[in-house]
Amino acid sequence: MDSMLRVLPRLRHVETFPIEAEGRKMIAIKDPQRYATAMLTVEPAALYVLARCDGRTTMDALAHQYKNETGQQIPMQAVESLIRTFDDYFFLDTPKFQERRRRVNDAWKASEVRPSALFDYADTGEAHRAWQELRALLDHYFLSGGYDKGPDIRPEFADLYALVAPHIDYQRGGKVWAIAYAELARRFAGGTLIIVGTNHQPHRSPISITRKDFATPFGVVEVDQDLVDEIAAALPIDPFDDEMPHRVEHSIELPAVMLAYLERDIKIVPILVGSSSHLIGGAENDEADEAFAHLAEVLANIVRESDGEVAMIASADLAHVGPMFDDPFKIDDAKALTNKERDLDMLTPLFSGEVGGFVEYIAEEKDVRKVCGLSPISIVGAACEGLPFDLLAHDQWVDPEGQGLVSYAALIAKRPNYDA
Image 1: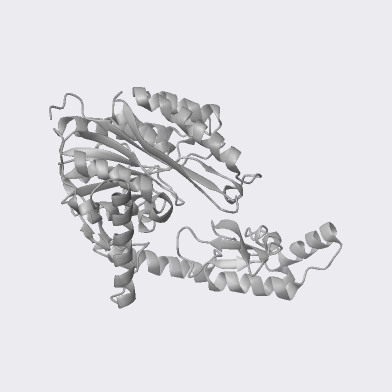
Image 2: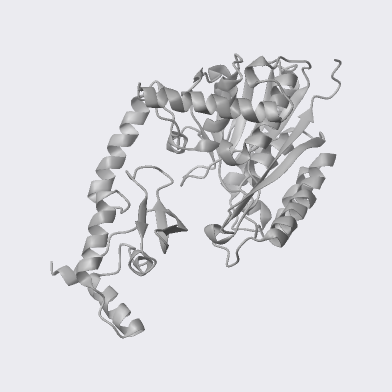
């Protein structure tokens, strides 16, 4: 085939964000599914080509479009080089990528436990030093919050019913992480935590469960297989049909790492849930609506009847705003303050156990602030059957250059009729 008639391969789902490198404005491109072997950095002009990597546009059509729009010839050698580089690093949906995906997925399926996607497990001094630094970082956040180190906290009560906690990384959200999990350590004496986390990965199914235990730097966190079976059997869909998002999803891994750090013999049920846009005026999704309603009902029954042996965690961040999240404005002090005020207004219905009001607030905003914890919070909140949440902490990470803001909070619902 003539090279000019060759179709540009489709660019896979990627994340892009602006950076500065050696004083130049550049675009960083990374693969949220982590099949790519590196993050790539390109000139902003390269986005013109990448936007047309759709599996339909030919090189000839690209050249004509560029000529018509700019009056100049597009440098085809540079285009070829860009395509080769993106294919070499597995950012394009080509036979080379498909073979890599098959090998990576097969290896993950064959593993007895879920290997960490975030931490290096090479048996090297460098990896061990990184784990020690992680423990020291978590110790710091717990101690600076007025608590003992996490492993030293023992249960004083047994009244935890549900917790809303961040899934932002520890470096940016460690203060609120420590508050949430210190309270968990103080208030949970049971054996299993059901973690409902946001599924940030491309996915087919609204609910995804894995049976794999979770490897962490502090030891393996086991999955409660019996409870997994009970939940899966009660759902109207097969939650194991689309298990691959668990391979790299951090919204379950980071809570598992925190539980291992606490050195408590606690099992988990790892549940990833997709978008709830159908709840707030998006496209109808009867399958997701029915599945989420069933899941909330099943969780409510399990936790209510467990006599404190089982509790829930909604692993959920709140707003995502700024240029790195496709907004046209930068974040300044005024916008950060406004976002905090909106967050607190959004959370207020939960203080009365009215999860519907939380969902309605986001719907009225048309989810303009991209609340990624909508699904986990709405499901866990519904499973709490009207129990009020108390706000433990709220905070925001703001990019120093104003490129983005992520907010998050810790909330707790306590078991009713609990006698200390």
